[in-house]
Image (cartoon, rainbow, N blue to C red; front, side, top):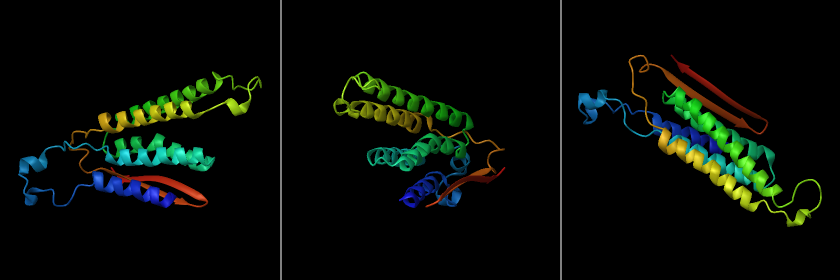
Length: 189
């Protein structure tokens, strides 16, 4: 299952951000169009990553499987910022990290307030059977999804190309095995 998610994220990044070798004048584009900076939205890899990450978090929470939940959380916090960096927007990557950390903290606060407002704290005054996390989890999940959509749909726009950036590249690599997870970045600058 982990390799399927990693493969989907890598394929989404490759198909969303890799220019074709036919994007030059020979593909029917004028030289001016080929030389102009791209105006396409680059948020699709982050959108796929966020969908997979939120699904893993929900599945991990439902199955009470901590490592699945944490893997989804890592994908949520790191997927879109890496996508911004790959597309030449390091400032937006930093903003994305802060937006997602704020959304995660807000979701935890919402769940905590929802749970404790029912009298479900550690004093034992209310039976644990009467305590429901459902509403808090739904609102917290919507908060996380809303921040992800804001990042992926509104913030993910291409950077204008400069002469210095045309020859640099950054390549992420993700390897997940039953006993090891490895994330690396490589590139040419």
